Image (cartoon, rainbow over all chains, first blue to last red; front, side):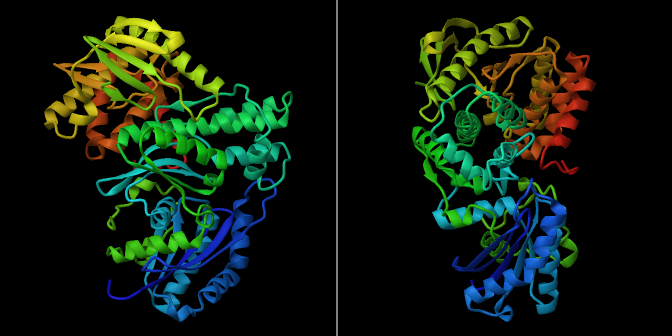
Length: 327
Length: 203
């Protein structure tokens, strides 16, 4: 590397707006995240409005935290997908504006791969099988021959969405995941639908059954059983993928990865297969700009160049579409 | 012990394979027991049904459900996963066509495999054996058959990506030869894919 490049990463796939600044030596200089407060789920247009209104302040805060000016930025990266169209477009427009105004390269990055790469940077994982779990995504991926291959994924809704929707239906308050986790601690188990299809999974039937069960059962028991069922499904497909892909490390990523019970379960499974268990620090588990910036650097350094016309957002951007040139 | 799969330890004793679904420390006891027992029972039953439908499988020799153990005959061969990428194009297509035929036979008998991948199919001589029916079920539902095809297609995509298209095409050739209702299942496969979070027309 000739010199230490500085990349600004803009994250805006869903309800969070993030601006991160990372240097090519892997140092995170700033990582500011602003939330669109959720009432009754994400409304894409309202979330996009929130991002547009807060973009300037978020970017300024990130620059201030990094003690640099916009002129010190060498590359601008943004989350190109997958995600909600209106939100993605706000991030893309901001990145294009900065790129054109400051005449610096722009890189559109895949949000799911950004989660994996920031995890690898901070946990020092070499070649992990990754379980990426969040409000919008649920995937089991591993690297083979030039791409992150998807071994398992949800066939319908994401795990975070399942838990959040349950919490909303039960009027448990926000953040749903943390409240369900807390209530689950004093619950006991009853049977709920367990749906695994090879290495894929489905949560929509489980969600409906949990909401239905809550009419009769104690809320603590429903929370516990929902978590145990959903997480066992996740661990099972991760275990199957681990055996299939023959990897030696298992890494968690995404907002749902903060759940202690899920961490414990994955760690137990990994130990049984003599695999190392890794989980990145909490501040990069949820959606953030630093991960976008870091992947921007990796891509730029490996020779990737995007023109403005390559920066159209991709709402259904697949993890295995991206040619990985930096590994 | 000759193998450690995701859910079972596999032992070889003479000509017998002993498959023991072991307890998982990460699951609550009730769920753990229910899954192991159901799957042990299903595996033995579905393997027998599949054989009767004309699909090559091991013989079931014994089922001991309190211990969640199935004993079956040993199939000496190679997992398709381990050989498909190295095979000649002719062999590769022939194998996929054959997997498609066997899957067609399963589906015309309403047998769902549940984990149809190149890890769970074994080439022995010129036959392809199907194993690991633990996630399977008996079902007439078009949806269940469609998901079976999706699982297979994805195992091609993740592990044999260079050949996904030609292999799946060959699979469908074999499948359509054995199963009359194949059009309905392929149509449903497309709907399931479109429902998925990451489906792009490119695939």
